Length: 227
Image 1 (spheres, rainbow, N blue to C red):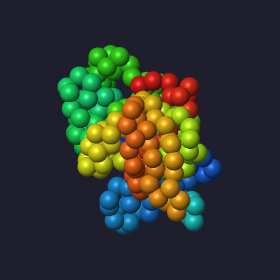
Image 2: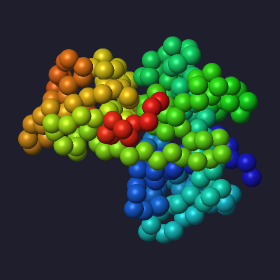
Image 3: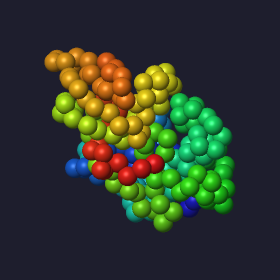
Image 4: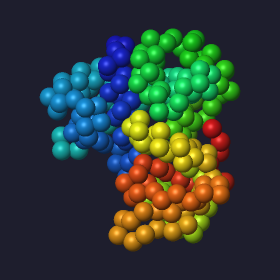
């Protein structure tokens, strides 16, 4: 059975959720419902379809886990989405805040040949505009070592690794501060009790709220590896 676009979306989101968990391959159906903005009964119905098609396993009280076949399907969907985003930003000149929904629409109809040409035209990028890794054509997801900006030590140099939000206004604001993937920054100070972070970008220091700092992940300069 070939996965439909709706099934591919579920598989891709399930993979993304599991990707951020290093200690458990299972994710809850409620977490999947939250990220997809659908009702729990809708997730239950789709999970059953995906299980019957061999794309995932479902274990009561633990949640769902992708099978190797389901993981492959998810990775190909993620690869297509992130390459389309890269093409829209690098070639067509869109802002990084404009491309997530457009990539969902274009990715659902773009053929592998078209996506491979986008890969060529963007120079075979390693990350999407938001810093997320792009799976290889043979289905391998690069592992990235990074940490939430809200959790790292102050008085140290970092590089912005990823931005984990699709909120348009947050992305606009972060871009206006220069806080985009690949940017070299210095966390100068952290106010106590979840107070603002003093982040230096170039010759300017910005005061970043704790909530916003939780959508940014940073890494040591030598671990970034380029876009």
